[in-house]
Image (tube, rainbow, N blue to C red; front, side):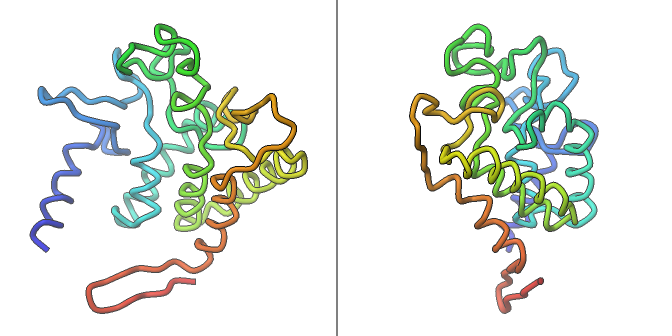
Length: 207
């Protein structure tokens, strides 16, 4: 219990100055990575925020605050319905703190809109579904699932759309794609219908 309390207390150090969301990381000197509007590292990082909501790391009030912050950046974070893993630090670079530099400096698969820098990961979308369920954003789930069915399932292109901000499968030169990641959305719908809250002495089922 003490370890859990210390961990939760430490999370306060990873909140953006606005208090509305979590950052990606914190340097030893206190510099935060993942604060939109900063001159450097001014992107939004999706995973720590949707995970905090989906897995009930934060309470209901903070969960709504985090999801509202994501909604406020809708055009940037959901340009093609699916939720991107990160926003843009400025000038279309995506990340500006990769080992090789920014998206422009690194180039290739590290350009913004591709792979880990702004490409869509189906597993991230699945966890976003859990966050949507918790906060009552059912229309987001519907739009995303329809996008998967119409654009990828119906054309047999069920690979993670890691190119062009979620428009194109990673192996775009193949006629048929299938990865287990693509089933994350459907699996998250089933999981989201019945949320399990684990306690030390009980299991609570939330329909």
